[in-house]
Image: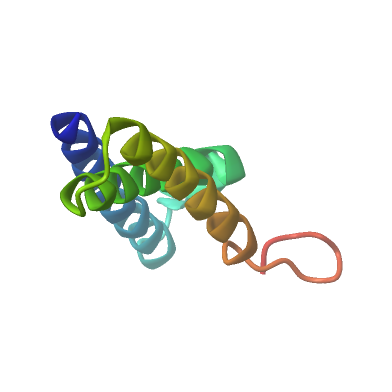
Length: 101
């Protein structure tokens, strides 16, 4: 199972790097606003990236800490849920109109 957690961690980190990079390019280069992942995928896309990252990180942590397979799986699911919630509350700020700021 460690390999599954490692692959999830790698995919999640690549997803985070791509998300940030595309967001920076979309705001810095005129005419490239369509590349912004927040506009394309929004909260569901951010949740997927955060969930995959949290699943991998928490699963690997529990596996290497000596937890059994079931403990590591429970930790992985809890880590995924935790990062999805963090991504929800620490994500894009909205102004009074409900638009992203």
